[in-house]
Amino acid sequence: MDSEFAAVVEHMPFILGGLGVTLQLFAYTVIVTILVAFVFGLARLSRHRWLSWPAGAVVELFRGTPILAQLFWAFYVLPFFGIDLAPMLSALLVIGFNQGSYSSEIVRGGILSVPPGQWEASRALGYRPLTAFGSIIFPQALAIMIPPFTNIMISLGKFTAVASLVTVPEMTSRAMAVRSATGATMQVLLLILVLYFALSLAIAFAMGRLEKWAGSRYGATSGGSDAALTQPTGAVA
Amino acid sequence: MNHGLWNWEFAAHVLPELLKGLAATLHISVVSGTIAVALGVAWAVLLELRMPVVSHAVRGLIELVRGTPLLVQLYVAFYVLPMYGIMASAEVTGIAGLALYFSGYMTAVIQAGIRSVPPGQWEAARAIGFTPARTWWTVVLPQALRKVLPPIGSYLLLVLKESSMLSAITVSDLLHAANTIGSDNFRYVEPLTIAALIYFAISYPFARVLRVLESRLDVNR
Image 1 (cartoon, rainbow over the protein chains, first blue to last red):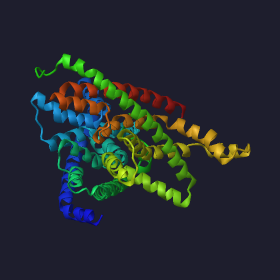
Image 2 (spheres, rainbow over the protein chains, first blue to last red; image 1 turned 60 degrees about the vertical axis):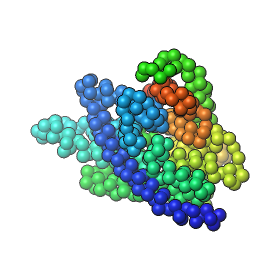
Image 3 (cartoon, each protein chain N blue to C red; image 1 turned 90 degrees about the horizontal axis):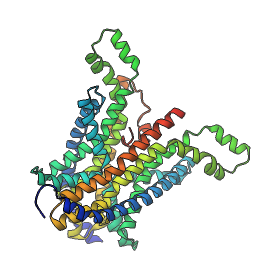
Image 4 (cartoon, one colour; image 1 turned 45 degrees about the horizontal axis):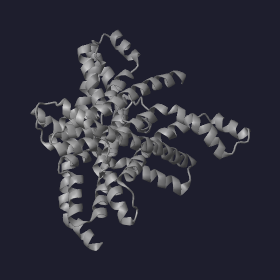
């Protein structure tokens, strides 16, 4: 037992380096997820079919298949078509598009949940449609979106672990390497469980602050993050 | 065999193997999903009863499974538990891990359902002499579960999709079958694409049904 504990201490810098890769991957997937969520969420609300239909097809495709199947497809199949992405890039694109697709429903729902009276009032006040959307509808929708987005952000932190299956040297893959090299199975797995849990707590805390800020600025119209927890991450539109 | 982007002959050749994997995936999803709902109900009731130590333990367990990656939890179940003499096949270990993970998510939904049952239902049940246990079973839980059927359905759909994670602990499910065929033949295009299409063919209609169900329940509210 003691030698196994010593092995974990000895390999600690290696695993913490993996945590660095995990955090990097997390940051990239947050950016891709938010971009995909807003681009596709808004495109699906468009009156133009050539915009809303393809957006809907991509979203349904990503929501209808497992993230691992998508990841392996990007890793093993895309090279057949001449698209050879680095493991890190394929992981961040797949995780980002997958969770972004779920999140596009949050964006769509958030905008649709702003009462129509707000549109009418802004028209009565002489706002142009685009200005009304940007300065009246969108900020209110944003405040509604934050609680469900908290769940997405926590999911993103956890989903980074699947990148270990396509050779990205993040925390889980390094832990598994240390495990097979030292046999300190329990110690190393417990260590990364604790680190992932701390990451989830940090994300939840940061999103809680964001929610409070948006609530005080734009008026919280939602039931808070506890209500959001009862909804799966956008699994039903 | 390695000619062209898509080989129909190879696709037809690997289909039976993939369907065998699909059978395993369906079996895993149904068993795991059922256990997840049952555990979710158990956790929700225990939390609603507000027993001092039990509630905290349940709350802690739920936070833990929801705050860490499913993949790492599966590794713990697969590699660590046997060191303590808990021996089970990879499939049984995977089913249990998947069920525990999703029970954490089901709990919040079911709790919301329980709280949506009007207090008058409790009072009426007491007035006609029902014991608390009987009230839970025959009055509260049936109403609670009916109300939250759509979100539970979405989680069951996630159970199906996330069951593919079990391929990482050597369980021969649909995705594992596709990967094995791919690495044996150095050709991943057909098996992985067909596997993805099979997942989609199950998941998409199921999601559509849930959407209809959800809008129906909305009208009744």
